[in-house]
Figure 1 (spheres, rainbow, N blue to C red):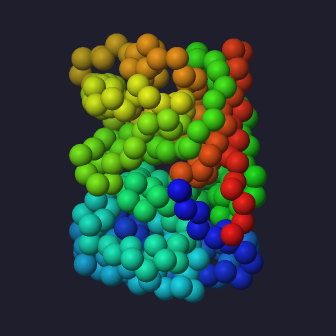
Figure 2: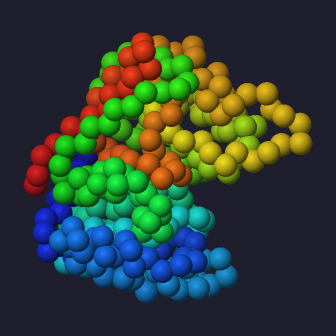
Figure 3: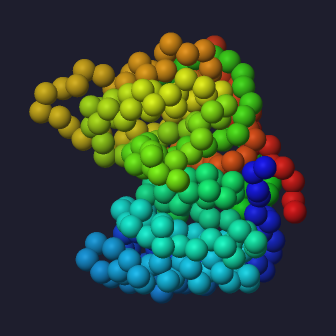
Length: 305
């Protein structure tokens, strides 16, 4: 049974931490917005820490996250940014207290490591969404979607894809995140179970060949054959190759799943883009992909606890 942390309410306390890369700027804008939402904000020691490219050394980042995992007064933990570094500390974190008193964890990109780990090892929901580092560039819709996800309000997205979809209607539990990090989880205890799930994917800064390699790995390992649906988000800032690969990221992904029958939609508003809408991992969702390219996506919250 997938567990759902209690939704936030006014005057709840949240903590911001940096599990991975250091911040190159302050996040005052994000802190002010959280306060506008009626939340009390605690800034973790790791947020402005500096150790080479990381937000403090591994020990500091682990200690910082651990104290908020164990603190019952903290109702959500928000990753300040991604980058790289979460995989270096994931196995040092103790989720015993967290499991007895769960709270929301928010982030995307490198934070996919934590979200995947929470889903697979604890069957716990989490939120893939904008992080404080990206708040100033985030669209109002993306930031509002995070607020709605945290407070348990309905989430429904509609858009039209510019790349040909595979039409269909489906329902299932939502999983996914950054493609590179999901592949990095393969063979570990943090590896998600893909069977009968709706999978969403996004990535940034990879070449078409790298995306092709990762998609074929997922296919060869059987991850793609038993899905109920696939949502393809932004694949941007593609690394230029000396010899052109000959396919776009969307074409690469379509090649990997074209033999299956489940609905597939492209250009979904999730990933390293301004309009990065909140996605609740572990939540039952419905996906309706029309023949005209129109897509409807609904997160059916299981209700307040």
